Amino acid sequence: MNFKYKWTIPLLLLVALGLVGCSGKQGKEATNAQQDKQVLSGVYKTDDKYSKRDDGTLQPDYWYFKKNGKLLYCTPQVNSTNQNSDTDFWYGDASRGTWKSLGNDEFEIKMHDVYDNDYYTIKAKLNGNKLHTYANSRNAKYEWSADVSTKQSSMTYSDFMDMFNKAKDSDQKGIQESGYTKPNNDSSSNGSNNSSSNSDSDSSSTSADPDEIGKAVYARVFPSEQVDSVEQDGDSYYVSNEYHSADSTVKFQINGDTVTYWTQADGDTTADGKNDAHTVSIKDLLGN
Image (cartoon, rainbow, N blue to C red; front, side, top):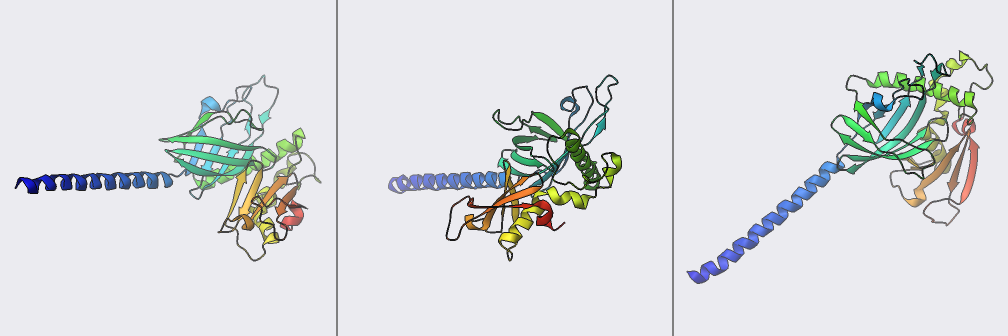
């Protein structure tokens, strides 16, 4: 009897350890799966504490996150509430970009202004209905300050898009007014510089949409291929098909009213594909 129990007990211990190991592995896999499923969705509004302009006027920012990893961002134009301010109103701003989960409710956000050259790569963390965005690198070309935004469960997609499109129009006018850089959409250059430029349609302003530009670029390089994604990386973009291989990815940059893209030379297999440069106007590229 003693001899039998002598071998039974270690055997039971091995089985128990095996079960614990399997349980730990499954728990880890479950945790990883949960992290992979973490998503950002819906509308977030920047809290008032972080939304004051130089004269004290509140001008909040709004985020719209899509579950597919895309995002829209806008700052609606507002009238100054300070009678002593040197400006009557503050221009709006609009950007497009992407987000991805880093696990543990943390995310990476990349976005680019719809009209000018501003681009940002920032980190964010979700805490309940609050989204905390952190300041970007001190070496970043365009500065982003830390802030907190709250989810707006009552705001619909239609409400946001109406606000986003108005912010785009204001963004473009602000660029034209300041002379900071030439807008990608130059449709109002032949008209007066007053409020009549409100006639600009959303379809004309899509000339600066990286997704549309990426699809048009890809159609030039690979006419028979379908675009799977357009991803931002700093001031550049990469457009690719479903395989996302080096030889199926095209890099491009938006520079004012022109686009430069790079293709690989025959027989070349370099990773970035940046060999032969091609520059074309957005108007010609999109056939407008």
